Image (cartoon, rainbow, N blue to C red; front, side, top):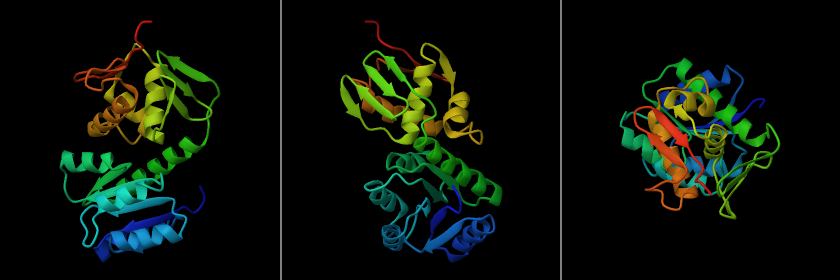
Length: 232
């Protein structure tokens, strides 16, 4: 992706300028907004490739802005937060955020997360192989990025799709948290266990008959997750 257009949204001008300068010097195009309302106005008129969005803002906060963007687009969203609370991160993921950065953060961490989410977005648009995966009532078309469960089409986000494929390709094996994060999210990840809890929960809601009593995706406490196809 050449010269991606990034929308940076934060009510603190020094932080907006910090992010803008460091992205522009590395070849990104950047536009900025001071709150969620300005962000939505910009988003509706430009072809944005990535949104970097503060959680706490006046007029419209980052969570509501994320929710509204997700109603119309799968553009990658990185949430900025001064709160290192797991529940706040989970709320952001539940509304559709792809990643988060806790303030204060350095240039290296910012660039690593920006590159990672853009890379995952490109993977989602590019079929890497042909064929199907079939386990129990789940049929995955690798080329079309489509999933059917019990004969019904199921809509998955790019990350949910890649996570399901990785689990199905290693059916019967316990996959450690760190291995899943590095394979699905990228080599920059490994300790973000809350990512997995949220996304495994999303997958269970979409593919399991009873998410509280899964047939397919099992938790191996303190270790990772295991995919099993029900017998018969």
